[in-house]
Length: 272
Image (cartoon, rainbow, N blue to C red; front, side, top):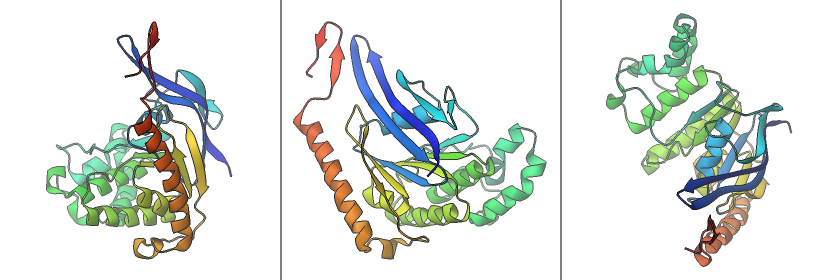
């Protein structure tokens, strides 16, 4: 397996006055190239901070992050991020939102046909002249995915992109994105707190600890594709991985309830 991104002993903390909150602690992690790398962990563990560090939106306090051996010191078009909140421009049509990246670079004409093909693949052909407010939540997510893929990033980073969708729409989006990945494979870093979502999508399931977060376990989800939710959930191999991962997540959650969150203040330790 070839590593697309390497994290070595990464640490990140935030200061508020005299208080220091340790969010990522001595975290080492390999993001495998052209694989679906899914990161799961307890809420508040520091997963979104990890996303911002990998994307280059924030700098590490210690350790290093490299992509292809080159240090990650800032954002790059090679690493594209989708967050939980929609990022479509409300004043642009679906077609213009999908074409936004090439338009900014002055390459909209050359990208028109690839954009049309992606829009068709995502079931958006009939909605090209609609504005985001006229689209359902699932359609908005599809338009964002089409826009992201049109820019051909080497790494797609998705931070709980289907959170907030109703259960049926979320299930459809999971199957939809799994099919897109199978047709257009690339390196994915997908963050979630949903164990079923995680295992369904993953080639590698990376279980994170409570904050300050680090890797607690890695599971290879070596199950065949294409996958369908209604059959995948009953696969005994998937259930076995789920049971093992849930045991680790439960242990981490119990630690969070059983002990105060680690924080320090200048001049002494704060137990609150």
